[in-house]
Length: 434
Image 1: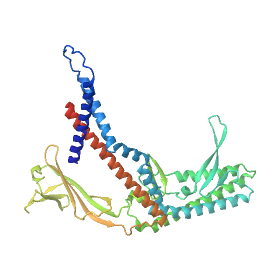
Image 2: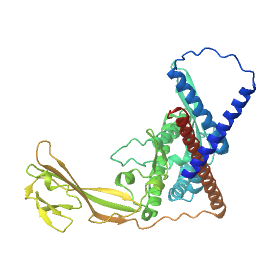
Image 3: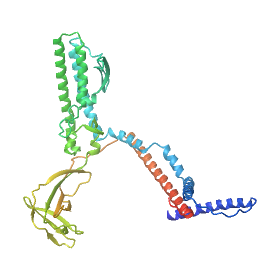
Image 4: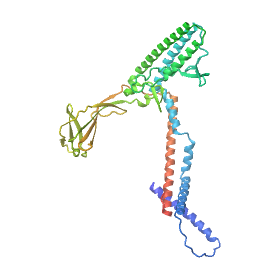
């Protein structure tokens, strides 16, 4: 690169010199003008700065044309962004991922339960010659529910709400979490569906007794459907449990995908991102003693161990690089170990310790020991198998991403080269750096 840069600098300099020489020859062929008395011209520093900047930009622009930077840039901009290919790959692979397969099973089994419950409700209402055709329509995945409401002027209005059958399948998901119980989308959609049924019942010519009877039966059917949906969903989760190793809070919000900015959706897509192979348990303890000497710590290539001698009684043992072992005095601090999980795709080593220390505010030393005490591996790994046509498309998209990355590298290398040469030539000519 250095030889190439020198060659380009030399070539560019020679080209610029040739252009200047030609310009001077043309000027000399013109009739000479009478010499004017010499006057002292004061240099304007700002003008010099502007001239050198224009020279730098002009040289850089010329080299970008010669070395292909502009051509590479045009080619790069003519192609779709790599993130569009990455999104397409994700969509193609998702149906065959652990999360995608679980989505499909929970959805297909759950929607059957939802459709069966709705048929039961329609049949119960039909006994009283009440129809839901005007209030609710549906297709394979959605109920279209007419909702009535009073506006600001107490005028009756109506709109159509879309109730996702897939969402209905996730009733109860996340509601056992002690961290956040605000997962109510499925509840709200069930309420919209129920309210549309109640509105149809209330609009009928039936007696109040008959209306109450229909509403009670509808409630019972829906409650039973919801219990069946929860049991069905949990049975799918149990069937794939061996493929999961998840933090406790993730287990409690199973079936919830966090979409960012406080929004979420139902499904198991987050499993694909947060389901690690190993659960490493680390044991953390922080103790302090006012009589510990800071000079004992921080020895190069030495290892330190915090040892619990008996309840609330501690000592730090140092092993120097030459094998010498020294110990602090025995001290007391009423602290307890706390364990916390760390998930990873590679196992940590049991016994591996992160030992840290810091001086006390006035005297003494704080000692922290963070040790790996247990490592568990999930029982099974999910091996995604794509159909040949899907795999071919994925491979083609990956190749396109690689080509765009190579083109991007060439483009930036050429831009960098042009910038470097222009800086060298500008400095040689004007003594200015850019």
